[in-house]
Structures are given as structure tokens and as C-alpha cells.
Length: 115
Image: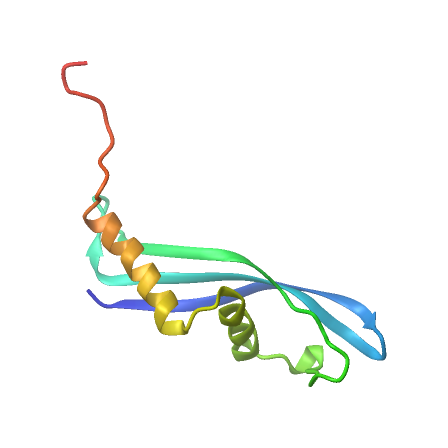
């Protein structure tokens, strides 16, 4: 099973001013999707796994500053991975494990057929 992982940043929260800096990002809203290229569910949809959350970003006086309109998705990815304390490979391994669990669940649910 091979999977493709994508990062999305649907929203960045910022303040108009922080000290002498303008448009300072404070929160990154993110979502990471991983989709199998071969394994499907009973309805024929490719198995997938998602993680999402927010990452707080604090501007520290004296630190390098990236202006809001100069931010990149790679900058956001670096902040999110640092906040998660994971490499991109570790995060992908977590999502791949979630997909593997969906393919072959270790916990089964239901009720007995005699009910």
C-alpha cells in the first residue's frame, strides 16, 4: 500500500499589530490527509486518514520575522511539525497506521446475530 499525504491550511489567525510588527500570525489551522492508492472500503472509496488541529505561533522580539504576505505553506508545515514534535515521515507513518487499522481492524464492533 502506498499513500499520498497532503497538508492544508484553511485559516491563519493574525493580529493587526504586535509591537512594531504588523499582521502577525498567531494561530495556524491545519489538516493533514493521507489517502491509499490501492486499498478501498466496502463502498469502493480509497481508505484515508486525517489529523487536524491548531498550532499557536508566537512572535518573539529579536527572532526572525516573516511578513504575513510572505508566508509559505512550507513555513506553516515547519511550524506544525515542530508543534507536533514529529518529522514528516513520522506523521505519515502515524496516518499509514490509521489506514492499516481501517483495512484490518483490531477491534470489531456489532451485536450477535441471535439478537
